[in-house]
Amino acid sequence: MRNGAKAAIVGGVFAVMVGGAGYGAYNIVSAVSGDGGSSGTTAEKKTGPPSADEVEETSKAFFAAWKKGDAATAAAETNNAQAARPLLVAYGGQAHITKVKITPGTPAGTTVPFSVSATVSYEGKSKPLAYKSELTVVRGKTTGKALVDWQPSVVHPELKTGDTLVTGEAASPPIEAVDRGGAVLTEEKYPSLGPVLDTLRERYGDKAGGTPGVELAIRHESEEAGDTSLVTLAKGEAGKLRTTLSASVQAAAEKAVTRFAESSVVAVQPSTGQVLAVANHRGDAFNAAFQGEVAPGSTMKIITAATLIDNGVASMNGPAPCPADAVWMSRKFHNLKGMQPNEGASLANSFMRSCNTAFVKLIDGTDEKPLTDESLTTEAQERFGLGKDWKTGIVSFDGSVPASTGPNRAANAIGQGEVQMNPLNMASVTATAITGTFRQPYLVSPKLDNRQLATARGLSSDTAAQLKQMMRLTATGGTGQKAMSGLGGDIGAKTGSAEVDGKETSDSWFTGFRNDIAAAAMVQQGGHGGDAAGPIVAQVLRAGG
Image (cartoon, rainbow, N blue to C red; front, side, top):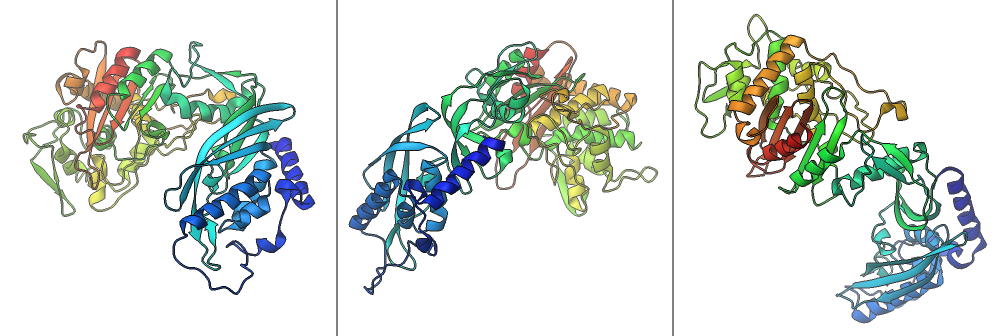
C-alpha cells in the first residue's frame, strides 16, 4: 500500500480530521494536554493506584468512545492523548474498520482484557476482524484522574510505537516462491522459510509478475520493515519467483534443526554460491542463519590457517607445536579439556585436533614472516569476501573480523574475541576454502534486480588444496569424524566451540562439505562442535551430496 494509494488514503484522513465527524473529531483544546486534559475542578487531586470502580469507569468510557468512532474522546481517556489520537483516527479512517464491538473481560487488578470484533470494508469488499488485547488503567501524573495507560498495542496487540493501520491495495503482490527445480515452497511445508518468504514478497513481489490484493495491514514506521498483513479482503494474483533453494535439501535442513533448540543451518553450492537451504529452530522469527552475529569458535581456524599459509608462516606439513597452554599479551590460552599436548605436531595435525595453542603461538608470525593486527582481517576480507557488503536477496550479515590489538588478536584467531559470524558466513568460508574462489552466496538471482554481488581475490590453488586436505583429515580422523561417519564421497569438516560470557555451555559450531555442497550449523549452548552442530550438518550434506 504505497505510492499513489498511500497518498490518497492519507489525504482522505486529513480531510476527515478537519471535518470533525466520527473518528475525525479532532479536539484541538485537549491536544494541549498529554495527560487526559484538565480536570476542570478544584477538588483535591487523587493519588495512589486507581480503585476497582475507577478501572471499570475509565475502561468503559474509553471503550464507548472507541466503539462510536469518537477518537478525540477516546484519546482524552488516555495518559497520552497526543500519541493516541492519530492511531484511533486511523482505526476508523484509513483502516476502514467499522461495526466495532468490544467485550471486556474480568479485570486483573488495574489491567482489563478485552476482545474486539469488527468489520473491515473497502471498495465493496468486507471481511470480519477479531482479536484480543488488554489495557491498564493508571493514575494521571498531573490531574490525578484515572486514565488508560496508552500503548499502541491497546488498539491491536501487534501494533508498536510508530505503526499505523491501513486498508487498501497491498504494498506487494503475493508470490509463489519455487525452488531451483520449480517445486513450490510454502511456510506450511518449510516452517523456517516463513520470514524468508515474507521478505521475498516485500522485495520482489512487484518483479515476479503478480498483481496485488486488498488487505488491512500494519504499516511500520520503517518502510524497510514492510507491511504486516492482518486481513485479506481480496487475494491478488501470485507471481512466480524462482529461488536457488533445493526443496530436498531444505526439507533435510528443516528436519535437522529440530534436534536442538536455538539451532541454525545454511547450505550452499560451492561451484556457484547459490544457497540451497536455510533453516532455523528458534522461539522467534529471527533468521539467525543469515543475520546472526556471534563468535564462530574454532571453525575460524580455516581462515587463520589460510592466513598462516598465504603469509609463509606455516604449511600443512610444517611444524605447528601444540603445547598445553600458550600466552599472548599476558593472557593464557588453553585447549579443550582432555587434549594431549604434541610439541611435534604439524599444522594439519593441530588443525584436525583443533589445538588452540598451536594457532595462538603462530599468530605473531616468524622473524622472517611477521604478522600484524591487520593480517587476519585482510585475509578474511580480500580472500574470503567477508565484510564486503553481501547482497543475498534478503537481509543478511556478511561477517566481521576486525583488526584487534592485545589479547583479542590471538582470541580472534581461534574464533573468539571480536570475530562475529553466522552459518551463512561459515558455509561460504568452507566453499571458498575448497574451491579457492569466493562466490558471494545468494538466494535470488542478481539478474532479477541488477544487484552487484560482492567480489574478492580468493585463494591460490596451493592454499586451497592444503585447506581442503586438512578438512578431509578432520572429517575422517579428527574432531569431525564422529559426525561425518557414514558419509561417502569427497568429505571434509571443521568443528568449533565458542565460549559465551555468562553461559556455562559453549555454542556448538560445525562446517563441512561433501562433493559440491557446503554447509555450516550453529547450536547456541550446544557444547562441543561435533556433538550438536555436527549431526545437523551431516544430515544436510547427506541429502545434498
